[in-house]
Image 1: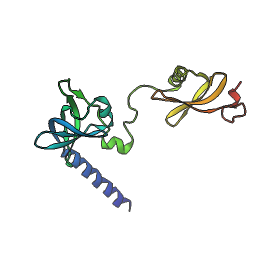
Image 2 (image 1 turned 180 degrees about the vertical axis):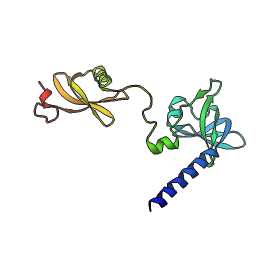
Image 3 (image 1 turned 45 degrees about the vertical axis):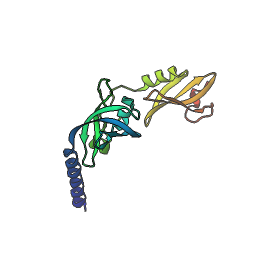
Image 4 (image 1 turned 60 degrees about the vertical axis):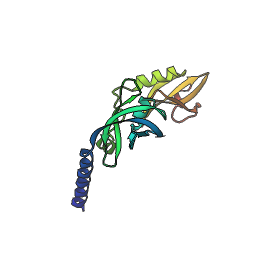
Length: 184
């Protein structure tokens, strides 16, 4: 059974790799007629093209219906264009951030690879920036740091995230099993 499963996985990798090898570079120039999240319909006059900017690309450039754009990217076997650069009107071309490859998505690699360190020191700094006074040391917890913080004479459990977001989770009393010994 293991041999059969390994053969199926290998065959799937070959099919996915072959699909990516078939993508061809292309350039599309036209008017944006419709917008569906990160996908744009571009009317070239004689035909329409579906352009995918990706979630990061959508945030990198502002495009609205009626804009004239030029897109360079790869045409997938399904007929969609995965954009690499976009030029809106006479503006300079914007190189879009690369999305994660299929291998990175499959293995979980490439997430939070912005090389910016985020440890206890940075978590404390984010909490202070949000107006809290950190008490004790931050504790790592999945995708954030949890710590006890004081604000307006009350104690709270807060979570500091890499994105700079600080969430106030709950009020903490002296009887709290996790933080109670630090409440004074």
